[in-house]
Length: 135
Image (cartoon, rainbow, N blue to C red; front, side, top):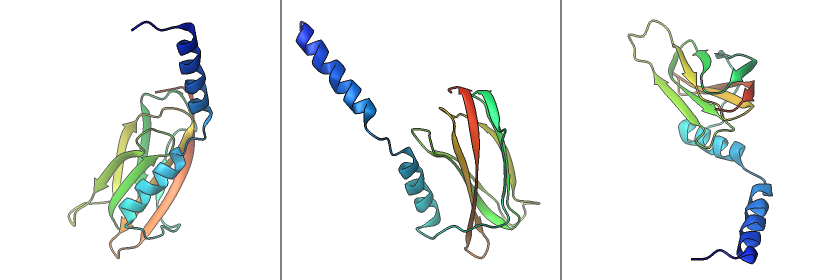
């Protein structure tokens, strides 16, 4: 197949128009959070998410999350193509509901942690991480 100049311009303009459309990455993250919570609204509570304010490289961003009394904690990156980052489950023998890991961030974005407490309630917190180079 031979690509003509007109075809190349059409493809280029189409790609530019698609890139300018508003992306709903945050909506995808909110949908993922709703799946985790079963549609229950997550309130504020005793949950701590620790992440650096600014990172030079988004490939390995250290985070830790703790929520006393939690049976599960899910972490979401609102700007990533796939917002679900990790889910940590804690059994009755867990000493404390704490997890630490490294995540990949595509760009500057919010990292959200949602904890499911033993009574079935959900609590949530978020931090913004500025990435100077994408992951």
